[in-house]
Length: 267
Image (tube, rainbow, N blue to C red; front, side, top):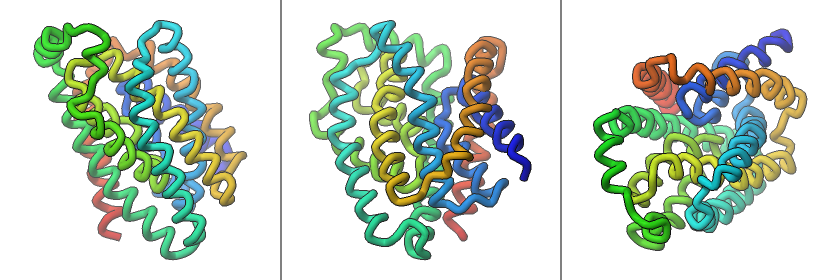
């Protein structure tokens, strides 16, 4: 494939992320595996650093607007970062390009895509205008109350699950993360839920991505080409979001992700 094909793929994924907020990992990793024939361990490792770079800019912007609930981010990282390190230790022991590791990553990626498809469809229902209005009324709580989870252990435990998923698949810190936050922090306003999801994904994907890089699972030239396309794509998508039928796009994406997930699980 000519190099510009990766730039175009990065632009397309960035555009969809800008339009819908669906995590780039759930889109980019299957594209690299199915359409470009990239080996799973290279697709996952490269996509982790791709996600860290793209979400860092979003986090800085959200932090300047004081939307990031850092207490929530800390609780999620307390579970996800150690889990990511444990997952990297498993991959180091198996060897990232070994048959066992490839099967583990491919199967786990399929499961993660199925979960993301379900979470994306759940967001279609939850983010309807009527549900958002009702949720806004229920979430009019003081900041210290809004950042309290249903139980202190839930964000740590669920963060650990997401940390393992992200390390093995590069998928999970987007749609799944938002769904977890909606369930665990029911009083947290929607903009701060989205901000928390983007912010905690940066250290998680950076740790997991650098870990994959130390195992030789990152294609640096591919990463540069994907970023060259995705950054303009995200910029354009963010400006077109008000003119597109987001719920329709999310519904179609959930079907596509379910198909890709089922195909990987049944391999």
